[in-house]
Amino acid sequence: MTRTPQVLVAGIGNTWLQDDGFGSEVVRVLRERGAPPAGVHLADFGTSGLDLAYEVMRGYDALILVDASRQEQEPGTLYVMEPTPQDVDGSIEDGQLLDPHGMDPLNVLRFVKYVGGWPGRVVVIACEPQEVTDVGLGLSGRVAAALEPAADLVLGTAAELQASGAAHA
Image 1: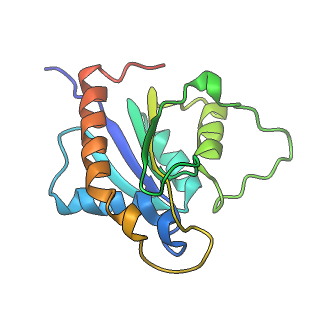
Image 2: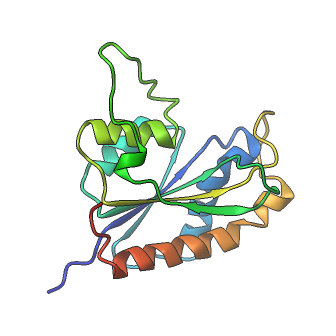
């Protein structure tokens, strides 16, 4: 039997800060579509970066992080980024504080690299937010319109990672 590469799709962000909840909403859309393909695991981590870091260390072949990210483009613009272990500083100085509720994707990857749990290939699928500073529920119209295309992009990326065997970086 051939082993199916395991891909973790992790939605992250704060749903109380409008468009910052993009990652969580993409995972919701994917769940509403039904069961994901074999080997694809969907999880909404919200703002719990430490839980995400521990889940990643379970030994996935690849990780897809879904989040909002300011890249200075039009709100609703989707981005695909693929950081490598060389892109992430895996050092944690003695006594340095890691806030378990404030770990952004970079700090999650930093912690995972520090403990030796890099998950093979890592892909970040992000959306340019319109509003992430004011407290409020719900996505802005342009970001909400990007949910279905983002869900398609996540599934296509997961299939590509699995087809390539999600080779370890």
